[in-house]
Image (cartoon, rainbow, N blue to C red):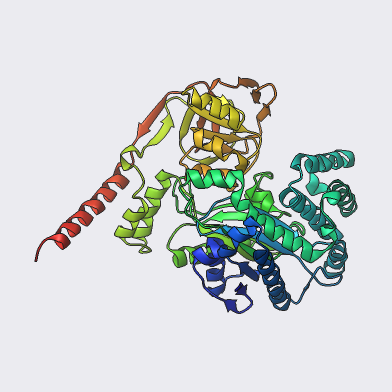
Length: 536
């Protein structure tokens, strides 16, 4: 079995069908000279056999991992699981088509007790080392061991309360060491000794990522997005860079243009002193622009340059995951950005004007959009909202409140439009997303997985609505001072991030100038087609 190496002067370009879109784009970025941590890829073709449990697939998997780790050790000068210069890796999925948040990732693999001591010795940062250990235990426990995340979350909450801290971000190294000990006690009997063995962790993580291809949420997403023909996922193993090393570090997601409106300005969410899952899971709110500018004054210019280069290289709007490690920018992933229909039309026009794509290519990209129904909706008399959050996907949606996917399914089955309101953004709710007219969450950011899915589905979405407190047992929620019961009407405004009780009156307008330009392209394309088909 051939593994593909990326980075460290190796930039083998292979199609997404072989190594997944994520790895194919990673290799292209490495070839462009962008700062990409070295990685290797196990191919898509191995997925079905690993899922089926075939012995030869297990052997190929193990051999490929050994060969790949040797490459990463040579590329980084570190040793996997070492007591002095430890190499830690992420184990990521990647199908030929993007499936944001639907497949699994395991971070900080190789973080054994020996590696913890090695990180402390190499960096002088015990807090970083113990934060990596406890994050590994949480990621491995939830993804590989399928341990209940709520039990691990309870460990964190109990320690945060005992320490009088505002969140786990405020815990010191000694507290994080105790947290890792508590989490280890919870999951070690299920782990068969793998928590102390770096290679055993790696093999189990790679198998779990392959298995996530047949998870319920992944199957539902492929069915909804008509991706059933995809053959499987690849597995990318990449050297870790650490965004959780203090306020000069962080993890973020950036869009080269606004994927909700199509505006040319970049949209960036960054969480300081964090790792990538903190951002894309929606569990942590992004830091303010002022805080980012204060801690990382060069980041805006550096990231802006990367985004421009990627747009020109891929000739489309990019959705980029990145990490900053001690002030140094690393690019972990880029993909074509999911966007609302309204944004798709505007972006297509702008890219033509900028000379990045042809008019025929622009028409191809918007071919599936119903231009006749492309409207911009606003509230006739907005008034004061019951609560506000962050607008993540534009437009207005009106429906009956549901607080679970099951509630959404019940209301939808009765023929009612639904607004799904959830405490956080969980990709497990993809079936509820599909049935809903709009989506609201009390935490999260514009770049979380659920916001991406909402935009792809063209549904208004509001995230980070801190005034929203949901009681799933009572099937009620508080919106500031107001109370909302399941089944009651609510209106959401996905541009401004506003929630209004009841059914609000709306006004619809059409983007006439943009539609007229697209109509002129279509007419010209049809004329060219008729001339080409005419007998000579």
